[in-house]
Image 1 (cartoon, helix red, strand yellow):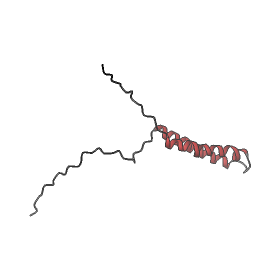
Image 2 (spheres, rainbow, N blue to C red):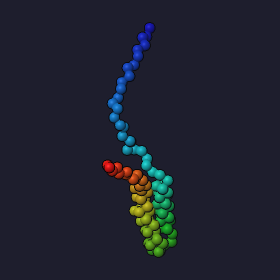
Image 3 (cartoon, rainbow, N blue to C red):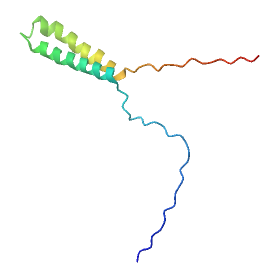
Image 4 (tube, one colour):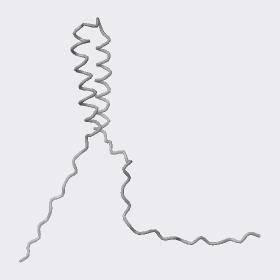
Length: 95
């Protein structure tokens, strides 16, 4: 017959656990900026496909939209974070 044994409780050290660096920190504004960047990129490629290869939409409008989408809005959506509200410090004076 098998004998049941009790498991010993091992206490771990009571140090603070650090937050995981893999937590998602994106908020609604990040997703909105990402969607705007994606829309600009799709619109830029759409304008590039219109008309002749030397049309103004292919050579002027499309590169501007693609630049704004890839270089400005997409990185802004990745790096944007709300600033933390700092609580005012109370200064104690001795009398």
